[in-house]
Length: 180
Image (cartoon, rainbow, N blue to C red):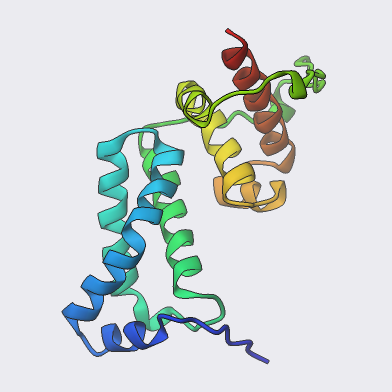
């Protein structure tokens, strides 16, 4: 049984399906800022994020007939943006190392007194931008996009333990940067 989700922009989606460029522009206007932010958090480069944003909207409008309203248009578009961002990283040859290949690496999650660290949002954003692409991607997908490690592993085509390890290391590195 198919579950349909209430989507406040479904009228625009339906108009896009009939070829309305005005409706496409309106959906772009409504979602471009937030989707750019998603791409930016993963790619950490304005030009790359803009490229992925444009490519994602083109993909979405081309594949609109496959949108089945099982989620909102925004959630469906966000998935396209995330997948395109990750594919862009892969094209740049970002490597996600499988921790199972390096059993000698200690992945203990060191404890930090996180309450002691009070920072401004801009400081955290700048610190996240300093992370290696792999770390930043996993951290972003987990913390900001709300994916769990099983989903991240599937998206990145890595093991779940690799996702967890990348997250632990990203968090540790982020705290190191912030303490500097």
